[in-house]
Length: 280
Image (cartoon, rainbow, N blue to C red; front, side):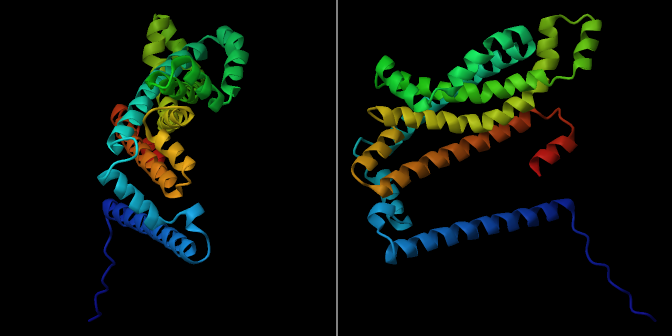
């Protein structure tokens, strides 16, 4: 009798995906460990940690902020202030960018008239606007929200504009033949077709909102993460600068995760092939 050959086990798609994900995260963690370890070693023996800091000092600063507080009060107050400014700027800028982008995307003459003015406004350095907003609106919430709005608006506007321009003309013509009004075409065809473009910009837009809030606080504020970073720079506290950057980065990553969940829920109508291609 011939010995039966055993076929290798066939892994399910879920097992392959989990194995690939585990390997991916393993490599990511290894990269971070090597990076932090080499930084710590270098700062301990070859470079001056006063200027470049090192991971252990940054960790000590974070622990100190979250246990003892900062020079301007509880770190949670600073985080809440920056987050409030970023969220408000994100919402206002995103709504304005989507609405104006879609409307101008469907009105070619109006878009041609507005194009040079929009490009000129987008070319203005944001740090200059942040300084002006502090003069106009003071050191409070409004000036930071205005800076965040400007950064978010243009990031969302250009994607919404392009998404409205890329709508299948045959779908629009067929809808009009069937008697659809301009508003019905806009809400039933144009907006759903541009949704993927809009969400693509929203992922980056919240990061821009955080940048706007921090830059506004850096220009002048009485609380916020930008104030902590500016104070750390003024006192040559490199660890404090890195600590503020880390907190801001964590907030941005959490916002990205929430936006991804929202996008997957709102765009369930897409074919599975498209969803799989985007998540690959």
